[in-house]
Image (cartoon, rainbow, N blue to C red; front, top):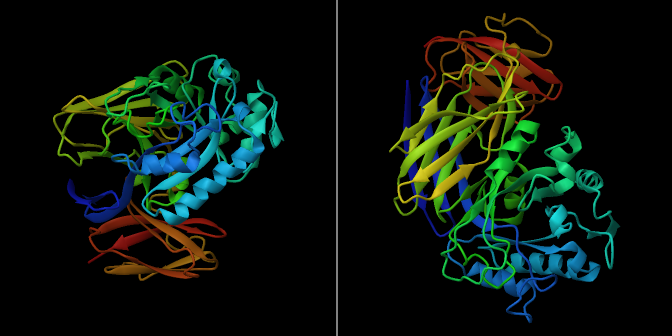
Length: 465
C-alpha cells in the first residue's frame, strides 16, 4: 500500500517540493529546490547582443537576473568568434557577478563547432577550444571525438548538444556507441526557441527534437532533456516562458553545475512547473543498479495551481536499437506510481516522463536508467556470513539495528524480500559503526545492503516489534 503526502512551499529563493512517501510502512523524503534558467545564449564577445553592442557578459547577467522566474543564465559564446582574452574575461565577469548577486547564478562557457556540423555547448573547460584565430587548446573543427576526449580529460567539464540533427557531432547517433562521448555529454536541447528572436513578452514557443533524443537513447547514450533560448538579442529569459529547470540543493554555481552534470534537469514550457520523477528514491538523471522491479513515482505540481491533464511514462530497453515504448498514460491526476514493470533480471530499462498541463504546456523529464540485478541481494542470506567485514546487532531488531564493520561505513540500504528499497541512510565520515532506525518498518525479514570503503555486504535483518 502506498500513500503520498505532498507539501509545497514557496519562498523568495525557489519553489520547494517535498514528497513524503509511505511505502510498506517506511517514511522517506527527498527534497530539492527547483531553479529555472538557460545555458545556451550569446554575448557581444561572439554574435550576441546584436541590438545592444555596448553590452558585455556582466550586463547580460544583470538583465537576466531581472527576468521573471529566472534563476541562472549560461552564456556560451561561439568559440571561433571569441578570443582567449575575452573567454577569460567572460569567466571573470560571471564569477564577479556571483559574488555580489546571491539570488542569481551566472555561468560562462562556449558553443563549439560550425553550425552545419553541430554545436556543442561546453562549461568548465577553463580554456577556449578552437582551430583558428585566438584559442587556448587546439581542436580540429570537424573532430568531435577529439573534442569529447578533451572534455572527459578535464575534471568537471561537460558537453551539452545544441539544436541537434542526425548528421551532427560526427554522426554521433549513426555510428557505434562510444563510451568516451557518453561520459562527456550530459544532455541535449529537447526543445529550443528561435535564435534571433526579439521577443521580450515571454510569448515565444519552442520547437522540439524528440527524434534525436530517442536516437541517442537507443544508441546507448544518456542524455538529459533541456530547453534552450539560444539568445542572440538582448532578451535573456524574456522571449519565452519555457525553461531548463534543474533540481539542486541551493541556488549557487556549484549546485547548479552539479545538477547539470548529474542530469537532474527537465524541459518545461511553464516557468514554474515542477516534476518530481523517481525510481527507488533515485531522482531523474540517475543511472543505477538495484534488485527487483523498479518502484516508479511521478508527481507534478505548479506554482500557479495548474494541474496535469495527462502524465505519460515512456521506456526503452537496452539492446533494442529500434523502438521506444509508451508504458502508460494516466489522465487528470498529478501523480503516477508503478510497481509492476516486468523488467527481466540483468537487463536495463530507461524511463522518462512527459506531463501535459491543463493549459497545454508540456514538461519533459530527463530519463532514469535502471538495471535490475537480483544478485545484489541474496534473499535469506545468513546474517553470520562475511563475519570479518560486518556484524549486525541486535537481530531480531525492533527500534533499530547497529552495524559494526572492519572498514568505514558509507551507506546502508534496507530492502524487503521482493527487492523494494524501504529506506537508505548515508554515514560517510561516521566511522566503523552506524545505527539504522526502524521507525515505520513492519515486522518481517529485510535485507540490509551495507556499503563500506572495502566493499558491499548484505545481511538478513529480522524486524520484530
